[in-house]
Image 1 (cartoon, rainbow, N blue to C red):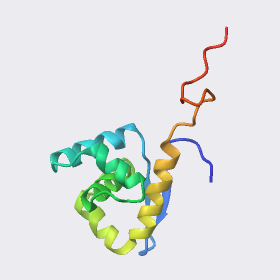
Image 2 (image 1 turned 45 degrees about the vertical axis):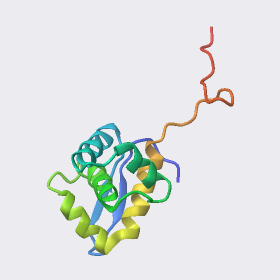
Image 3 (image 1 turned 180 degrees about the vertical axis):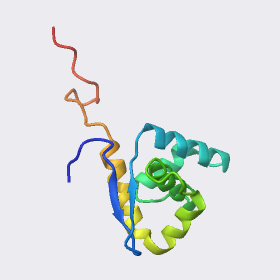
Image 4 (image 1 turned 45 degrees about the horizontal axis):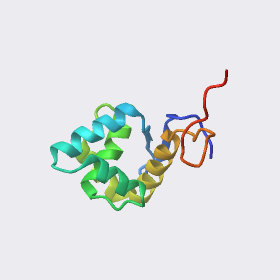
Length: 120
């Protein structure tokens, strides 16, 4: 499922509503802010979530909220916890897709990951 970066991901919920997620820079900054205030390491949380949701429930809840709040301004972090109770797999799948869409395409370059030199 290839799409443009930062395109919102529609997550159908059990009650028939749809939650939209977008993992852009602003969402990741909001996530950092929330998990830092909770005393968690944002990078460790994000890495754990990206590696199959090995982070904390607090980190998962905060990341889903941060990716959704731009489309759902009245949504709270606590409300996302309630949504996770009823729609856990759908939300995790939607979050994985939103994160995938936000990852930059790898530039063609050498094996080190360095981009190719500018053409003259």
